[in-house]
Image (cartoon, rainbow, N blue to C red; front, side, top):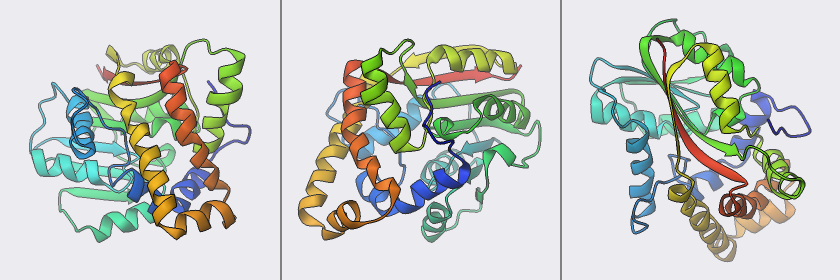
Length: 279
């Protein structure tokens, strides 16, 4: 596991998203996750939905399904699932700013968004048919407990699906110093390898393990983010004010736009989907 020098907490992760809230929405959109490009010709909106569809491929979701969105952000994926399948979706986020924006977008009686830390989620045991995490497991202070809580809240036969940023198995010193460790510092996250995720899933009790590397299908996300951010610097004064004069320590995440694209291209960092089942 590659960790930032200073131990991150739910509060520091929340601060990261609260401080950068308008920039995330303008650069990444409300889903705040990667897109999945199969042909390369899809719009960013189409690619974003394609990632969701790919993640949940093979699941028989319906109006009776109980779904848990771990790290729901603005709740856009939760709303998408509730609208498409009629399922009840419970989403958790540590960011008040994100949840305030989510509530301003309109209420859906099938979507329940909570300001709550996953490590202390207080959700019922053996309840959910599906729990999923799209790029939130990296922020968890204790990955083992992350899986233990997922196992606890899932009913027997329930599925856990994860989209995760990952480090390569044995990064060299240059990759660690110039790419992976700075990405962890700037993004308030931890990077684990595929084998570390697999081991923790197995030790927790999950079965039917499946992993898919989709780095090549998602890396275009960062090309678009860099282009959008460059345009904003040229056209929107608040970007220059925040990143040149602002006092927030989270503004250094700007540097990660270039690092993450380089890390994907060099395969120092990868992006994958995990699928497991609670027996």
